[in-house]
Length: 336
Image 1: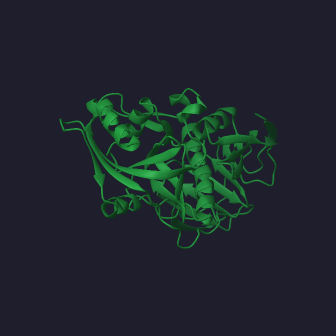
Image 2: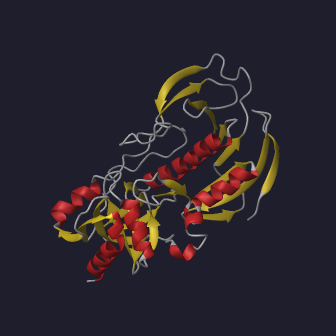
Image 3: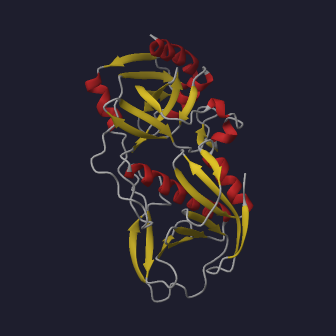
């Protein structure tokens, strides 16, 4: 992968570090800059949707700076509270609210994430995430990348759906349901049964007269090793040991949506057909609102994007220990 190194950052006095250009999802281009550990972690996080491209100053740039901003930089600046991300279920408490500073010399604005301590400096299409703590800064820098990708999709009429998905026979099967319903567990069980991974938490969906096509975001997988044990997180690259053949990177037609109900108690394994009039609303309830444009450079979302649809809807109910049996039943239905 082509990389370059830069000198000192004039706003923080820190070394700019390594630069890598990436094309994400075949359409969104960005330059990542920072310590080697950050660039390597970001490439792993974005796998398999990241492809190397030449880094140049005309691209949006996201830089992680391990350090602090210059003393007094925000002195006298105007400030207001801002919402960074409207989480419908409130599951992102360290990223929902922030403070925006304007009137700062040399930058368009600075946003403070008070939960992580990151100062996020915006100047044109360059974003610097400044934090002395590597993990907190890395998390916020990757969120900036996701902001750029998602808002670019939304500007072209693509919506984000809170759902997991797997691929079978060149078609996508979405697995929807509330938090804790077993979406990721169902997709991983399907992959173990021979399917390919599309996404474990978020789908990008475009719908037109020919139906819905979906792509998966590269969120790490939160895995439950055994009922009752805490979840552990693994990137897709780590979980699949870098085997890109097990993950779908191109858009696929969404043909089936599954409403998952997975529990720890003894329940019969069931896979039932749903009438589209009942199934379609539960799929569309998982469409997330457009992301807030807090960077200041994001394009406006398309007006009235078409919500996702599917040809078929199923309800799948099973206990975690019966996952193999549930997949036999589900795969049989899908192939019928």
